Length: 246
Length: 246
Image (cartoon, rainbow over all chains, first blue to last red; front, side, top):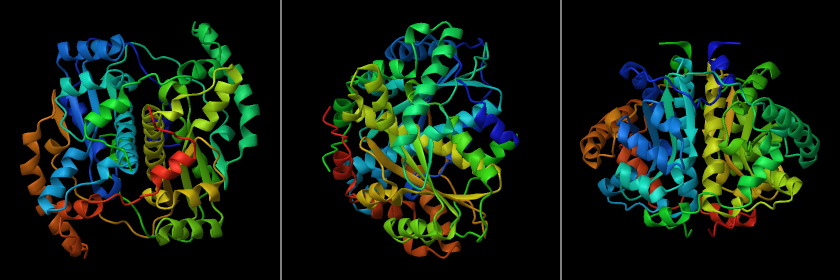
């Protein structure tokens, strides 16, 4: 196994950080790795906003529903889907942009953000830094958009906390690979026994780390997914110019 | 710079492959790296379908709009957003799943697919394999869903071709980092001069590789984005049970 595989396979999220800055040279490597990711039709429709200002981070921690690690770690990177930038291409070329009004455009944009974020996480972890991805950037999307001064046709998809870890949490167990990877066609039958087994694994793990209230994977997942837990995303996306009517 | 950063920063897409299989041990590493990626609320709502069957790959090459490298390389991995799997959690826990009906759910699912895909690409490239991501999996989404036998509440987001490269294409130039990464807030003013400069860079690059018909970045991007180039995504997503009305 090579170093890269080692980094990728030992990912874990860190929620306690030292009060130590991240050197510019390290941050530059993370950004370069994110930018080296491929994008659909080479649109490069991803943008980052790096937040180091302490007050701004404290505000983001609040907006994300009270996540103190955002205020504690020295760097927060907002990963933004950016059809504003590509809209300028349309204007330059005299062919007004349409794609951002479609679900296909939304999907392609979010996908590219995810790929870039995967790269950024791997880069940070390879440098011995800790990270935790933050979906809570979408808890109050309008406020995040205002705080980061995001233009029309952009959307804050997710955030990444970066810092020097104060602990090394245990890696969360994954499902049996047969519930993740299928051969040739999707096999529904593969799922029930693996999910049952994973529920037992997670029950033991949650007990070990003192979070037995969450019970197991099925219970914890269902407790989030029986509703839309960030209910303002659709309205905020529409306000940003994503019509999503085609 | 460490090995991982070297791998991430030297990414390029490969569109010519040797007729040599990918060893199971290598494929297993790629799959393990993808599965080690974090997922929102640990839902693990990503699934892969690995296609090695020659005829099935030929069919996918066709459905993706005629991409011969899908038929040529020995492995194609479909990256699937999977709310069917999490729907079973809802059923197990007696709390029926709702999140898949929302744009937030769609976004979170696609994002996790992107992160997993970033990991898979880095893993493959670290092993000396070539890859190219395939958005064309969405050109005829209904046919892809049927071919892979995907259940309700799942969607084929993107594909990944994996094989032994027959050439090493040049790395595509990226924009100036100031058009990618902002500090504290998004600066619109940073874009126009960088995009102009990038148009010149890409014009020279496209000429060098014999694709001067595409002119430059603005022209090439606008030629894709002045329409919805995979127009069936919305309808197919609705048919898969993604209502997207909240």
